[in-house]
Image 1 (cartoon, rainbow, N blue to C red):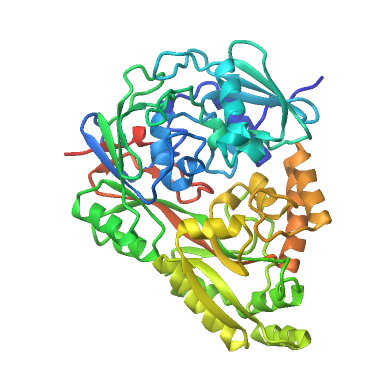
Image 2 (image 1 turned 30 degrees about the vertical axis):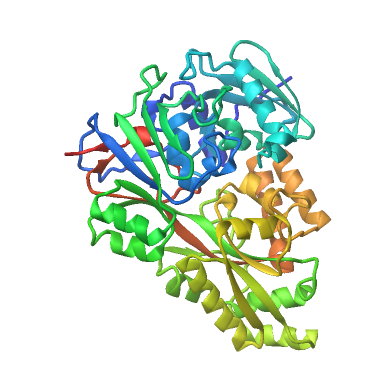
Length: 514
C-alpha cells in the first residue's frame, strides 16, 4: 500500500519538512520559530529569566488545556516537549516526532519518534509512553478538552520501540495537527501533580498553584540546553500591572493582548514577538429567539463596521477579520464577508418586524469592553438595543459551554489552525461550537476537506463551507488581533513571529544580556 510523507498545509512546504524533520534538534528552535534577524545580542548562558503569566492554571499537566494555550506556551515548553509544532507557514512540522505518515486513505497514521529521548526522571520517552499519555488524556474522568480529539482514534498500538500506529474511526488527513497541543505534550505518570514529569529543557523546582512556578535547567535534556539557569514564572492577571512589571524591570517577558501596550512598547524600550494570531468575533445562540432568525444575524453583520473596530479598538495593531479562514492560512482564497451597510441592516430588520434587544456577554478586559461599547453604538444606529454584561474569563467559559447566553464576545486562537479550527467551531457537534450551529452541508464539506490528502481539494472544501457559514452568520467576525510577547531590551533570542498563525515560544531559546 502506497504511503505518503506527511506535512499539513501547502504542498510547497512538504518537501522542506520531509527533508528537515529528522535532522531538526532543539537548537533549531522549532517551537519558537527563528531568532529575529534584528537581534543584536549574542547568546549567553546563566541567570534567572522572569516571566509574567496572564492567567493561573489548575495543574502543571497537559490534561489542563490552559497549560497549552498560547499565553502559557513558555511554561509548557519548559517542562514538556510537543510531538508536533505549528510552523510559520500555517502548517505543522515534527518536533519530538521524526515523522507522521498516513496510509493511502488517511485512516491510519504511523508516528515515528526520535530515538534516545528521556523524561527528566530518566525513563524513556518511547512508543509505550506515547500510548500511555494519549490513553490517560482520553479518559473522561480527567476532563481534558482534548478528549474530543482523542475520540477520533479507534485504536493505538506500539509497532516498535519508537513507533506508534494510530487507527482512526474516519479518514483524517489533518490528524497530526491534534498533537501540537495537549495530546502532543507527552508526560510521564507522577505521584505528585505539582511536580510533572516531562522531557523538556527544564524541570520543576517549586510550584505554588495560581501564584508562581520555578523551573531549573534539566541537566539530562536530550537536545540543546536552555540558556537561563532558572526561570521564575509569576501569575499576573491584570494587564496593566503586568505591563508595568516588564517596563520597570521586575519581569523580563510578558504575554500581551492589549493594543495600547504594543503601541507604547517601543517608546518604553521593549521589544515584541507577536502576530495577528487571535480572532475576535461574536457568537450567537442560534437556538433561541431572536437569533434563530438568520435575518437578524445578517442585519448585525451589515451594521458593524470592522474597519472602525480595527482602528478605534485595536489601534491598527492587527487587521480586519474576513471570516473563519484567517489571513495567515494557506487555504485563504479571497474575502467574501459582507461590507458595512447600515441601509441593508435596517431593511432586514424591517422584514423581521419586531424590535431586537439582547444581552452581550463580554470579558472584563479593557479592549473587550471598548469593543463591546463601539459595537453597541453601531447596533444602536440601526435600532438594535444591546446591553453589555461583563464577566470574568471563567464566567464566560461557563456560559459558552452551557450555552447560557444570547450573544457572546469571543477571542480565540483556535481558528489559527484552519484544519482543526473550522470543524471545532462550525461542524455539528464541534468541540467549541458554542453557537449550536448545525448545517449538514457545512459539516460534510469540513469532513471531506479533513479527509483529503490533497491540499488543493482540502482548501476548496473549506472555502465552500466558509461561504455558507458567512451567509448564515452563526458568528460575527470583527478583527484579527496582534497578540504575543513583550520583553525587556536585555532579553535575547526573541523569535520572528509576525506571520505566525499560532504564537509559540520556547524559553530555552531566550537569554539575558548584562
